[in-house]
Length: 247
Ligand SMILES: Nc1ncnc2c1ncn2[C@@H]1O[C@H](COP(=O)(O)OP(=O)(O)OP(=O)(O)O)[C@@H](O)[C@H]1O
Image 1: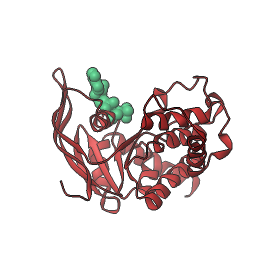
Image 2: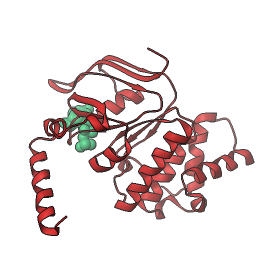
Image 3: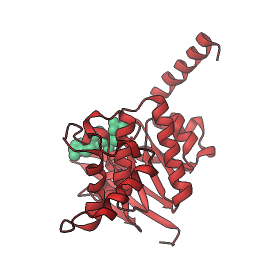
């Protein structure tokens, strides 16, 4: 695997009983790329992510990652009512890095503050997790994932539960991390517009990988193949909007 490649997947197949979930997936991601992974519900996106982060058993094929992985799970997987503060939630990311026998010192708490500054949430330091908005919460989870100093960050639908403004600024934050820190990003998303605005490359998945191209090379036909028949509904909906609102 060449040095500029951080993730390489070869002939990945995954079945549950007789049901094939992933079929012959092969691709590479280069260091510093921002890649969007799109596809309809049930396409296998989260299953593919699980294979990459080492949480999928029983697949065939090869998954190679050359670097430390950071992972931002779907929001529903984290218990938001858990009674901890923002600073403790972020510190948990450091804890993973240092191991359980290490107590936190003032340098660690300064690191937590620095991470909160990076994600634009320093004022949330002492706040309880349960009172945060969807967008604030996602920034804190991002700070926590960054605490382990990952080289590749994998995000599973980070926009879920965030309002439109919050989504755009969260994606801007991700683009900044890529530019300023050279972070590699692989992001599962249902927000096609923001994926096209933010990502360098797009992978279209529906059980098998239908395309993996530079964003500007992805055609409506590529989207139609994976989203059909919903794609037709989407287009009709857009036409209707254009007529109604003279856009
Ligand atoms: N352990 C399992 N047992 C049975 N079926 C499974 C298992 N894991 C995944 N599946 C099935 O595999 C398919 C792909 O699921 P996956 O969650 O990866 O899709 P997804 O693209 O992430 O969907 P969504 O966009 O709705 O989150 C689904 O039909 C799901 O029901």
